[in-house]
Length: 193
Image 1 (cartoon, rainbow, N blue to C red):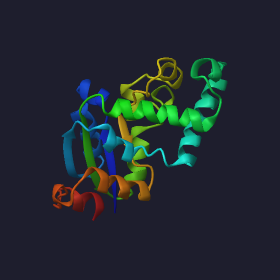
Image 2 (image 1 turned 60 degrees about the vertical axis):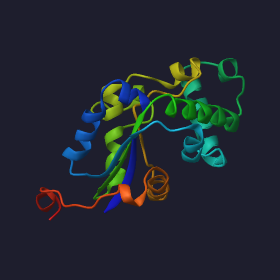
Image 3 (image 1 turned 90 degrees about the vertical axis):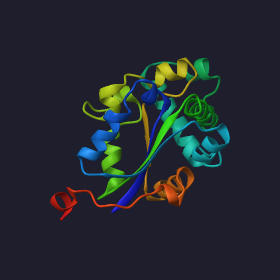
């Protein structure tokens, strides 16, 4: 059994997709054990998207450079640099601005292989490349090139913890112990018994 954090980002809230997104997780048997709507400040989101993780920021920059190559565009022309770390830092700032632009919904789910199940359900980070049937693939058409051209984060509806270490960190960042609830779902025996 694992726990994982989901954030329904401001675009998901503004588009009225909260119930749809939550119901998809519940339908596969994941248990919602904490839920809240919050409008967070930049200091909180900076903890979530830490600029201290240079390897992670460089990976974001490398992915962005790859996308530019695939679209035949010059990243230096659009972003003013080809340095992966600098691009990662720029995108990190855009993500922080995005998550603080309006209310979001923070969710803690629990279930069998919850992290990998949720990652499959939300789909690839960039909606235009996400598989049909995933949350991002069904409800968004944003892309890396459009987001970078507009100098903003990709509007991809949700964040999902990437691994167990990240999930633990995010659980402690987004939820107090008193906000996390334990109960038995009526279908647990049928699904997991």
